[in-house]
Amino acid sequence: MKKFFLTVIICLLSGIVFSQKIFEFTPACEAAYNEIIKLKIDTGKLLTEQARAENPNNLIPDLLDGYIDFFVLFFNEDRAEYNARKANFDKRLKAFDEGPQNNPFYRYCKALTYLQRAGVRIKFGERYSAGWDFKKANSLIKENRSKYRSFQLNNLISGPVTVAIGTVPKAYKWVTNLLGLKGSISEGMQLMRSLLNSNDRYANIFANEATFYYCYLMFYIENKPDEVFKYIQTKKLDIVNNHLFAYMAANLGINNKRNDYAKNVIQNRSLAPGYLSTPVWNFELGYLYLHKLELDNAILNLEKFANDFKGNFYLKDALQKISWAYYLKGDMAGAERFRLLCIKNGNTETDADKKAYKDAKSKVWPHAVLLKARILNDGGYNKEALALLQGKNINEFQKTEESLEFAYRLARINDDLERDNEAISFYQTAIRLGKNRQEYYAARAALQMGYIYEKRGQKSLAIAAFQQCINMEDHEYKDSLDQRAKAGIARCKGE
Image (cartoon, rainbow, N blue to C red):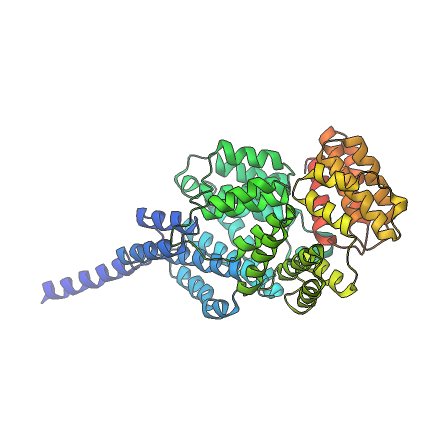
């Protein structure tokens, strides 16, 4: 009888031990993660299920499911998908609570889940809830850093979060004050470099994800675009088979006026089955064709994006660009049709969408020559843009806003051609003409002057120019320009 009870007790205890939840990043989990981070979602999901079958008590497959939900919802913004998947975030948080709290992955998994949900909630207009999720993530990762200082993945969250808080525009500073958040650009970037330079096992596993964040931070916050593209090349990032890297390279290429480079990246990415299907590629291709004034191809791709995209972010912006293409083709019926769609569809959550909506509501078409020069300059075709403006002067334009845009565009072209003195002169003219107006040109002129002075090592002049940008009120792109100017001041002060 005693032996019988002893056997029962041993079996019960064994059952408890074997049913305990764990956080274990197994080789199967690593293989699944590597596919998911390439946006090879179908393969990643299959491998995640295989990892879960190996050990149903392992919670890392739940973490991997979170990446899948995040990428699907963030890139495609499909409301039906959101309604179907949003409960998964709470389910994962509850599942992680069943795991051992003395494991560094416990708080890490929860913090990442809160961050992923915050990003998704912003896309679906739930900004207040997103703010609280962001605060929870920040608190969890701070606690994890305190308890597990050698756990390198802490930096994967702490780095970008610390930088983001440190560059919050003045208009949103009340949010960070309310939530008790403090940030630092220099500290956040150091955390990212520490992670990327580490030989730790998890640092190596998550290196691609860390690289993605690091390149964006280096591009936008440290204002080192040339170093970013050099980094992509020297590190031999796989921009063919890794669609997340392909998206990053193309997106940053577009924003750095490397039109041909970005187009080459998109057209040469792997088209093998299993990758996340997203209209984003048509959106970016549409811009790239527009920048070369290949208007029919621009319309084709941007219309496909507008028809296939289920979300709202940058939809008004895309519709405005379609209307511009029809306008430059001389098809005013098409131009008017898409201008009305720009007013009706999408939202105004981003600065670009706000600008598109405002322009559409004004019912004023841009000066055709200035518009062509802008589009070419946006693609990095500066000589072609300059040729359009050659021989013209400010006094030729009847409207103040056109004179202002002419001065600003000449400044940007000269800036891109590294003719710094000419650029500064035209930037100063743009500031004089537009500092009390709602167009963004004057504020962006001050920001660009700050970049030139910073490049020259004239930090006091750079800070003054960045501050001038911030001091201008009630203009387009206020939040994003203020964020860049604030980052510039922090860099010059070494903060």
